[in-house]
Amino acid sequence: MIAGLSRPTRNPGEHMDILRTGLVAGLVLAHAGAWARNDPLPLPVAETLAVEVYFDQPELAVFLPRERVAMATSDGLLPTLLVMGLESKAERKGASEIAPVRDRLIDYGFKEAFAPVLRARLASPGLSPSPQLTWSRSTIVSKTEASQMPQQAMVLLPYFAMDRNFEQLFVRLDAQLVDRTVLPNGALKVEERISRRYEFAFLLPADMEASPANWAALGAGKLAALLEQAGSQVMDMLAYDFSAQGRAQWDARIRGTDTVLDDEQFDGREERRGEHWVWVRTENDGVAGVRGYQRMTPEMITALGTGSRSAGTLP
Image 1: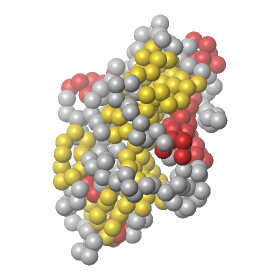
Image 2 (image 1 turned 45 degrees about the horizontal axis):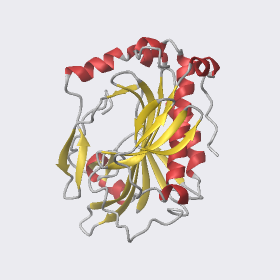
Image 3 (image 1 turned 30 degrees about the vertical axis):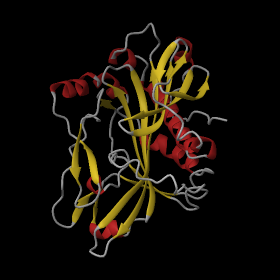
Image 4 (image 1 turned 120 degrees about the vertical axis):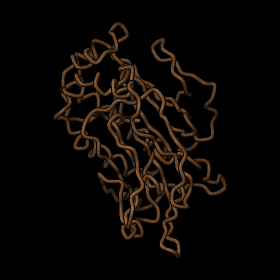
């Protein structure tokens, strides 16, 4: 999980944590298969789809090699997988070691750069012609507020981070389509229809050591440009995945497949390919999605801009 995020806690009194009621994308991973195959998702999902984005990440984070999760029961609702807080010395060490890269991006506004791309890509044939977008920093709402939430929503949780081995700089987008029902007793029932995870990662040139110092040496402008390109890629993934073409791949075989890009092998079935980048369809911990990779070259690094822009959309 992201270094620096606090452990979800139960809130007494009137307020309740969305993490426990199953409203935040990516943290509710149980019952991903509850969506029945004989109940096909409309195309588009909705004419005016409610899209809720939860984002409160002030700085670049470190993702651990594996997410440690614990099963919990959420106030009588569906069991929910909660990502546990930081505990180990190794996790704290990673957060410290990433400091040179984090400091380069201290003034970078991820939300400001990502929001226009997200807004543009959401309006798509597979999702909605008129999405209704809201942003929130908090995952805590009152019972009254919860009862007034849209009955159906696409919930998005974006991150920007590095992996623990400092090999990849990436943007992740967890997406979940949920249906909500207010029960006679006032409790909120949340049914997950579908969960997806989208990620695009940049890797340093093969002859360059994967270290925070080498990433930091790229400078703030180039790091920002990479994050903007990665953000654009994950939004392209979301729009593509819910298109008719993307949906046709949902039931195709994934396990046991791999993809080769520039003599490098990546787990997953190839979905799309461009010059020096590839998307692969994956399924990890029961969550399906699309992950992209691009191994940078010295020429690419030289040609990088200085952020404040978005990568072009895919054809």
